[in-house]
Image (tube, rainbow, N blue to C red; front, side, top):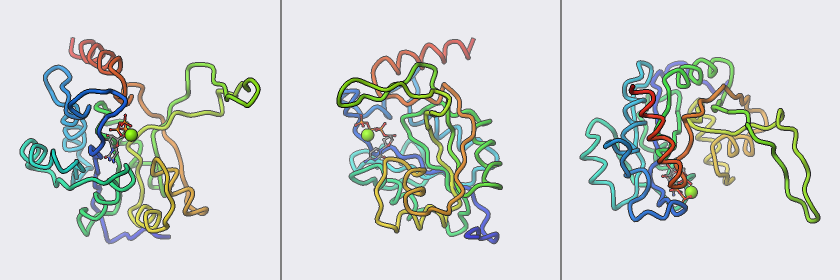
Length: 226
Ligand code: CTP
Ligand code: MG
């Protein structure tokens, strides 16, 4: 369908232009260090070292353009926008004309195993878009005006990144004028025909949001190093 077979590149866009307001740290969370290495650098390294990724674009805020360009001279670095969706859009504008597949990843998720990237790319042979998903481990409820309702945990998923698409699908979603918090939502809203699928994510791809997330990931890194 929209898949242009003459293009071959797989481009990772790492969005790192947020301010991390929920963490309340002076430095945005993607520039904090875990075991001496910047959070952003972990995912940059995972994508750069993956044999099927051809290009890595980092989207950052104006204040950090110079810092990120210095840290990652091998990546394209572009300025972000007001919302995550605007930041992804700016990344899309910067990708190489050969780009065939886009993988949008949150810089706030430092740990992305290569097997998850493998699964995403393999699934794009069947789907227009795919994202890693996890089954919730806790009971889930939905609050209602009076009380709450229990949700069927088996039917729920936690959605992570990278969210991966054939580029034309993602470009048309961005051109649709719709707004969503992630690419799967945006593509679903803008294209009822899009074939969207989910692959199994990894628990360690958790997003750094609160201080305790930093502590948990650092502990996890201790266990995998030893
Ligand atoms: N992001 C971005 N541009 C924005 C907002 C967010 O590139 N305008 C990025 C963040 O840097 C992060 C990812 O999108 O890597 C996921 O967003 P989130 O975890 O919500 O990060 P922040 O928006 O920075 O945090 P908070 O919502 O707590 O302010
Ligand atoms: Mg946010």
